[in-house]
Image (cartoon, rainbow, N blue to C red):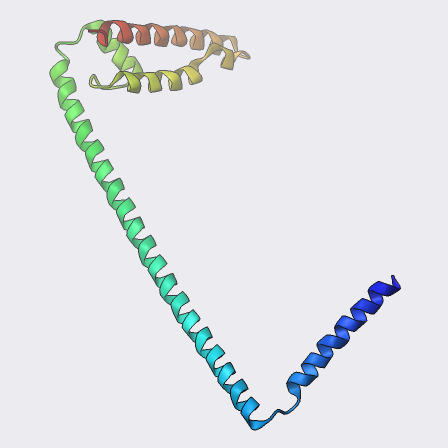
Length: 168
């Protein structure tokens, strides 16, 4: 313990001595060297600040460009989606005559257009089954019956679409 205290005291004394040596007036040449050194350090700090500012401005510009590209991409996707839905509605009216009544009911149950892919139907099926699964409504008997009936309808509709509509 005493050794620890002594080593701390020695360290503190060394720091104080270095500080005092720093404050002692020096020769004119050493003062001039110190002044040049301090000026050089100030120039470097200013250059570092300017570089940092440019870097920050460049990062802000890049983020703004990225955000602009993202917004443009989102707008393009929205436009494509709206366009595809318009096309899907047109296809739906065109295909409505050629699709059997059973398959029309299945698409109506899933609330999807006739141009929906099997993946779209699978996604909608999974979502609706999570909602209408009979085990989720085990507390209320009427809800459980309704959910059971709805789950059977969804299963039948999905199997019908999968087998009759998407097999060639």
